[in-house]
Image (cartoon, rainbow, N blue to C red):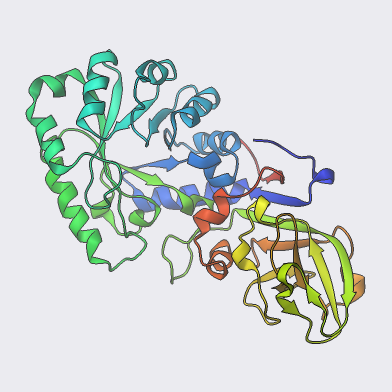
Length: 371
């Protein structure tokens, strides 16, 4: 990941490693006696995979889940001894790549299982079967066919059975119980193989969902795994954007593209140095003077005004004394004062998207111990 020097960056991502470790311990305790693995795909949800992986390994995490095989290869260089699962499954013709990097594909079809059986030389893998989310995974019929073939089962070293919940962030959603029933039924075909079902929100559903290994993901990075309730996770990521300029506009003047925001009074506007190229959702654009989308600057919340553009956005700081804001002052987009979930809600999206879209033009600053 590119690291822009802080003095040359218009925005700063601060990652609190102490909070990250605390969140891992919280999730591990909630999942016990199941082991707690982590999803570290997408550069650890935008935080920086190499740093995050080392911290979590030091905390005792031994099982890591990536999406792409190239992510797995990058992670292997960081963690020589970790168990690394590739959620995308087995890329066609790439068994040798997985073997070279000691990656375990989460096989999703009979075709993948056949290719792995022929070429893997007994290397371990996972089997991912679909319980209702209808994305990747063996269908029930395919999984039954695989398990009924004694030769096939002997020829692949299955280290883990896994599936994925569709609605775990909705505690009372009936699909959770339906998927659990399907998962338990599938497990009967290979009862001695360790199993993994729960993601971050799934951990909160209780022990019935934990099995042998959980896969903590976005909650590690501060997201609330129980939307609508108190967040048991500590905030890990803060995004600050520097003020590039403050300017006065007269009542009736407009700000930004398409003139969507008109000053209701003589106003002072702070121009901030990040836009949708940097992962700031364009949907945070506002034509209102009272929010709802806001930033936190000089100790208070102020509304975002006008269109978020590629490299810039604007905030109305009229009610803040001039002496408190100048070029280089930092405005919090999300962090301890505006949660990532709240900012995502204003943009009509989820925290996953905000975190994983953190751009490569930021300076990333890590606080807390990396060991």
